[in-house]
Image 1 (cartoon, rainbow, N blue to C red):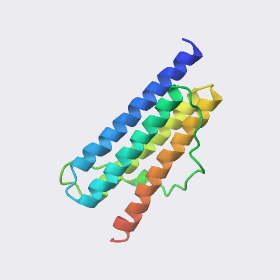
Image 2 (image 1 turned 60 degrees about the vertical axis):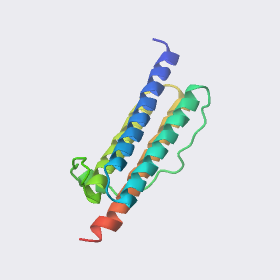
Image 3 (image 1 turned 30 degrees about the vertical axis):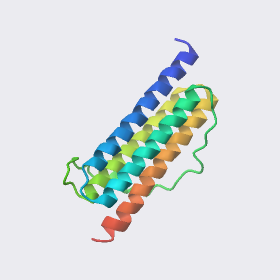
Length: 151
């Protein structure tokens, strides 16, 4: 298999994962009884679709993207147990699931970056990894402010 075919498969996989993440967040939003929670998850679905669009642009030839500086990691999500998605789940469980999802996406992009020899694509994938780390941090901050401060 050629280098270009490998890159193509890698991009197709990442595009599929971003669509899956958007579907996940839209599904989570649909199960929320709380309007504020619903909007948070709908916003994340839109961001994941933005990542998908960036990847599709890269696939069609555009190779510029920077995720910016590496965000801080509070590591709150590293120590929590996943909850089960349900219509009546509380905000805490929804945040835990979201943190775990973003951590997995970060790992995926980091691993994909390590698997390619294309320096431009590697930079793009590492930029997307940083975007996912930022999402996780936003969920962790919300968890810290809304859940940990209540206890």
